[in-house]
Amino acid sequence: MDITLETIISGKKLSNPLMNASGILGDAPDAIRLLNSMGFGCIVTKTLTLRPREGYRPPIIVPLDYGLINAVGLANPGIRIGAELVFAARNNGIPIALSIGGKTSKEFIELATIAMEYDPDFIELNLSCPHTPGYGIDAAKTVKAIKDIVCSVASIASIPIWAKLSFSRNLVSEAEAALSCGASTIVLINTIPAMVIDPYIKTPILSHGWGGLSGPAIHPIAVYSVYRVYEELNAEIIGVGGAETWRDVIEFILAGASAVQIGTGLIRKGHNIVREIIHGIKSYMREIGAKSIHELIGIAHKK
Image (cartoon, rainbow, N blue to C red; front, top):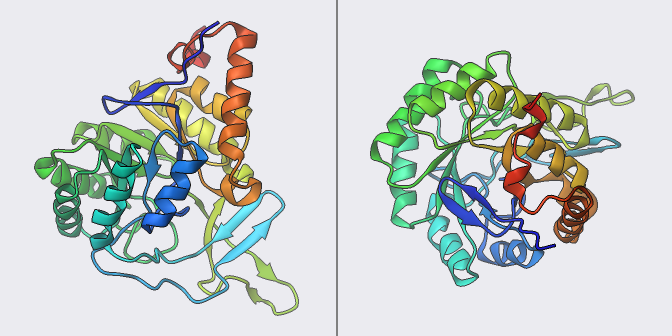
């Protein structure tokens, strides 16, 4: 039986539904080439800001049995590296999304304007980083703020826009706001605020104090988020959060995701994770008699 893992995001066909999550590699041409060699269907850059950021001093990561907590502080080489990243992706024949992060709608417009000069396939708006003051959650802490940012970028963008949100009690309203302002796709979810305290030092382990929890611990929350937004809005969604196996990816797809990002799984499972997941998905599809990923998107909602 012929099986295809092709999926469509923002009108563009991807060879498979897997991509890296922003923040995992994606900040240098060599990293783009490495990600491409792993077999992803699309690459997402590290979140880029107007100027380079050094981020926080170590320790910036706390490994846990159920994932990890990180507070990198949006360390990145700045938006101008985008030209090299897009060029590397083009040379390798793989679609690329430039992730951008600003403090205000004005900064987001400036970032998107520069990003469009490099002609990526997509622009991902980081509206959800939980640990860098002024950015992410701070910049988009209300539905109105999300509207301001997304509407501002959409007004000048000629490239499909993804809005990356994290879990909140207002998630459906936030996703609806982003879609109503011109976002083609919602990315769900980012890391969740978390902290680990050393009982002997008696202080938080991370230099910043708190960070973002990722990995298997947040996977059920991410699946729920995808399910709710798909159920209420029938939106095009990219699922992210704790995907480490083919079952995790299929859960996202059944909940309504058209594609899935992998972040912490690359750190915990290594570079073969993509091929292992693809092999597992194909075996599952043969077992249930499915020929296309499109047959599976959102079918957990069918009664």
